[in-house]
Image (cartoon, rainbow, N blue to C red; front, side, top):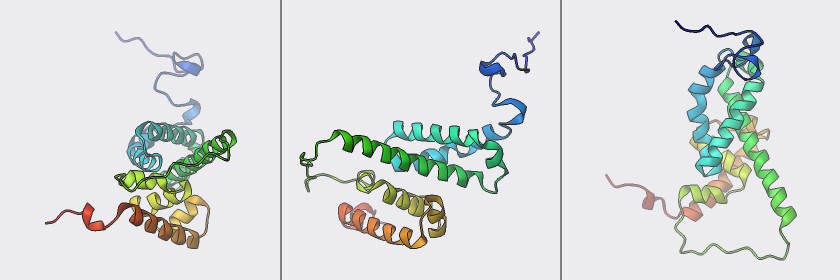
Length: 188
């Protein structure tokens, strides 16, 4: 005979809740389904932004945690996944700014940077990694996630003309780094 679980404040899980329960008073209603359905897409975007699996997992988890904190408001919105994508992108950019500040605070100014030699084989992820974080976010959201210029501008809090110009410059840099397009296509 199964033992009944307590679901009141003195429950069996951490914080007085039943294991698997997301919150009290229905605060997490629907969040598990949302997280399950959107986690893969969020991870894919995070991977393209971060460039490595571990950072992408961390960014995805941080994003889902932040979305959960505001789940009542998010779940009432028309497009919760768009909200989550905005959180993911802004969290990525904030973390990059934080790391850059820390790096600049601890790096002597007179240290020369190593030049990237022409013999280096460049992949798309390596080329993306060379873009500034905000430009990288614009390219990933615009061309990989296939969002409109208007959507990207809304997500990043900038004008549509900024998105257009940054994407144009970033694509030119990527083309310069990657070389001729025919090298990456297959002949049919």
